[in-house]
View (tube, rainbow, N blue to C red):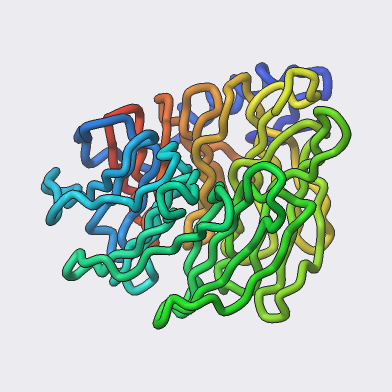
Length: 363
């Protein structure tokens, strides 16, 4: 693959590491597109971040705890009391486990595992003006692994994807009404076991990433494109090599592209490290080249709402800001990011590295 950077090409025989180093060098010599404006510390290593729609609040959660902190990040102070997720047999963190509703009046949090022994609660909803608990979503039929959360753009619906543990059937994409919190409809994704979820900007389509189990230790990573109006899957994209997993998805602002973050599940996978690929939604074909590293995870994958930037965290201990077409690396921010959030107005990016949180402002 030939990369075009700054008017010259890097030939096919250049290694991935050489390509990455060249792009980083050029990005470091460009004028920065984001500047750090705040830096503070939470009580525990952060696994998930979410901005309120007005950009004034920043919610945080760590990987092995039930506590949610809501920050006035400019004042570096907690807002109200510490929130608590529902109990579950597992408290392991779910990346992107926090979501504000589009009007900012609700905050939703989930943990990855929930089992019948503790009531099966896996998602909790708060009213942000009062911080009263609005609703708990629970399922006592079998242990559940939550894979992704999203609100529709009008805030009328809340969507979650999950898979069931062991031999229990029923891996699902579930849509709830936010006025009553009743199930509106469900789509069984089996044989796909969901591991990531993202909605298009107009909420007309959902991308559900996951794996289809094969014989032995074989897994087939796929992305399902689901039409939320007709409740059917309209396209399947074979996203990464066999025996790889999908852990993050993001839609471009215009809805034409889906970015996917993958990782090898077993050492025999031809995917040797965390990798980002971009796909044309209509054709299902990959657009451009892989962006890879030897790191274990893609810890952030976000398109900004103004359609200008694609932000990738977790590759080579950096956060990388690209143009939205993933052709020009604009800025590299050093740091082993564990979580990333972008404000809805595309003005701010928050980066968590262990307990430390920094906020950057786009120019």
